[in-house]
Image 1 (cartoon, rainbow, N blue to C red):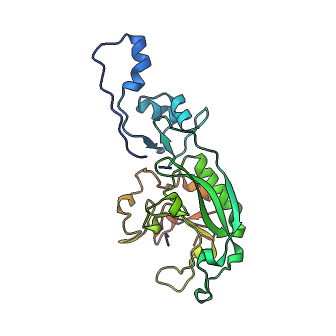
Image 2 (image 1 turned 180 degrees about the horizontal axis):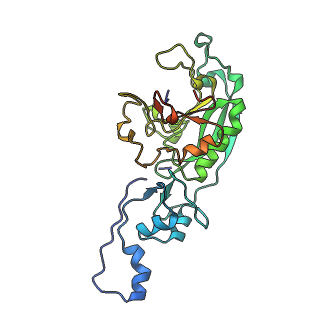
Image 3 (image 1 turned 30 degrees about the vertical axis):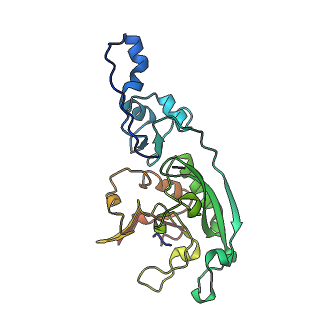
Amino acid sequence: MPKPLLTLVGVLLCVAPAVAVAAPAAAARTAPAAIARRSVWHVVAPGETMAGIAAANGLRRADVGRWNQIAAPYPVQVDGTLRLTPQAARLPGWRTRVEPVTRESLGWGPARRCPVSPEDLRRIWVSYIDFRGGYHDGSIVMHKRLVEQTQQAFATLFRWRFRIMAMAPLWLNQPGLTDTSSATSGFACRRVAGTRVWSQHAYGRAIDLNPLQNPMVRGAVLDPPGAGPWVRRDHFRIGMVHADGAVRALTAAGFAWGGRWRTLKDYQHFSTTNR
C-alpha cells in the first residue's frame, strides 16, 4: 500500500471535412488525416491489436508502431499505453543502475527499529514513462537480494509501454506533487496498518505500483482515499494494472500480487512473500 526516469494528455485533434469530393485514390491517401482523433493516447484492453487500434482511429498500423517505437509485427500488451500522434522526440532506451543507500537518505534512526539495515538495501534506478509520455529515471529502494528481479519487472513495464505516474526523486520527476502516497515506491519502515506486524515494505520486499490508480480496497475502506474513480477494475485507464496486463510483468519476476487476495484487494501491492 502507498506510503510516504516527461508529460501530455487528452488533446483532441479535429479536422473539418473537405467541401470538395476527392477522387477515390486521393481520398484513400487523406482519409487517416481527415478522421477526428478521440485522444492522444490509447490504453490497450484485452483482445485488441495494433491493427485494430490504428483502424479505429483512422491511422496506419506502421505509423502507430513508429510513434511508439514498436517494431513489426507490432505486438501490444494489455495495460500498455499507445501514442496516437507523432512524438516530438524518440524515447531513449531503458537503462538502470544500482547504488547503496545511506542512513541519512532513508531518515534512519535507532528508535525506529526497522527490521532491515541500510546495508542490506539498494537504490535501484530504472527508466519509466510517465502519464504524459515523458521519459524519466526514477529510483526505488529494495532489498539487495531483489535487485535483479526489480530491474526485470521495470524493464518489462517499459518495453510494454506501461505508464507510471511518478517515482523518486519527486522534486525532479514530478515537481509540485504534494501527495507522495501516489508515487510508485518500495522500502518504507512501517507496520501493517492497525497491527504490530512489520509490513513487507519494511524489509524491502514489496512494491506499490501507481497506488492512486490501483487502490487497496477493504470493504468500504479505500487507500488512498481519493482513488474512487479507479475502484472499478473492468475499466482500462492509464496506470491501472490487470491480471492479464501489467501484473504479468511483476509476477514473471517473482512478485505475488495483492489483487488476488481474498479478505481485501490491494491492487497496487506486489511482494515476494505474498504478504
